[in-house]
Image 1 (spheres, rainbow, N blue to C red):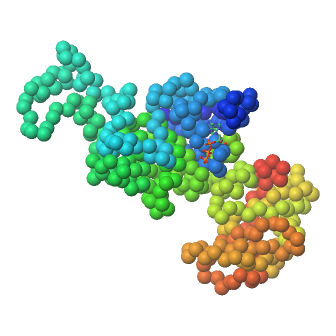
Image 2: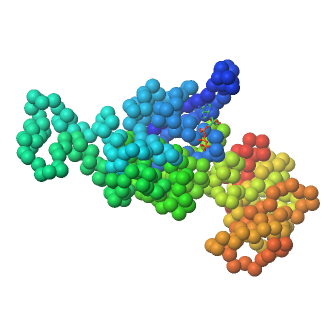
Length: 415
Ligand code: ATP
């Protein structure tokens, strides 16, 4: 196993004209990526479509060349190494199984090709005339007659078959070993694809949206299975997804990417509780965080046309430079509660109710004539007697507020 370090990594693609001639300009897809994935860590790369997640994975795998910067796997700088010398296995969204091979052969394929396959096999591959003990044993054994339908296996083949069996057991696909990919369901194919990556015991797993083709139930099951396997194997893993639930539930840490730049690297709960900027705050959490513009009135008051509230003292130093200026207030749906009329509470009208069973989500519009502010999302307990059109007062939990600079989007983070 090994840590993976990305140092000041840049990638641009040359823009190409329709007729195929280079237009001479290039577009930067990844900009100044610095990321250390610790040995044995499960790192999730998450971000919206087109932000550069797959490109980053392909650079690490060696399927693309970096425009600038360094990639380290363990103590080896791998920038110039071809993919098969990086000791990395990749699992894609499309399972990429060989259709004419059985599951067993698909699992064994990487092992047969692997340059550092099974050290114990070296003796078995020794040419006749060499006198290693394993080779001598094999020669003695090979002279004995075998029952019909049996054949001799080299040590290497035996070790490969054993490894295939172990991996199949771990993934619970032993009954499928003799099937062809076309005889498998989507979930089974994905497990075989995972198994093929695992069989080689690489230093690093790269997974690019491996669960996208599965239905919701199977996704949840396979998600848990991948996490368990990764914990068991302890293989450094970089997992790409655009699904923030996957990111939150699978990653030891998450790197949030937007427009080719890392926005924040943190544990799931750190990201949720202390987002570094408005992008992260909005991207992580479902329904997303609500945002409202407020004016700062020193030392600790924030005012909106519909309410004003005093913040805890820990905000005072952070608010000082914004005296008289505006900030963006962020509040998550679960940190708004239905309350009574009061100046510190926000009046609104229920526009929509979504009852999901365990939770109920309200869309509440704020009483502000001509306001273009979006409706606020509020999470409430399921058994409240309410109806669309009801007037409500929302109370904001003061210790759960987030404030963002309106120009840079950076969060003000109290100690
Ligand atoms: P998705 O979640 O939709 O797969 P992504 O975050 O993985 O998106 P990438 O596939 O890495 O995004 O693509 C990032 C950007 O790089 C996109 O704008 C894409 O069009 C561009 N891009 C990717 N490959 C190439 C290429 N070979 N040539 C030119 N542009 C490319």
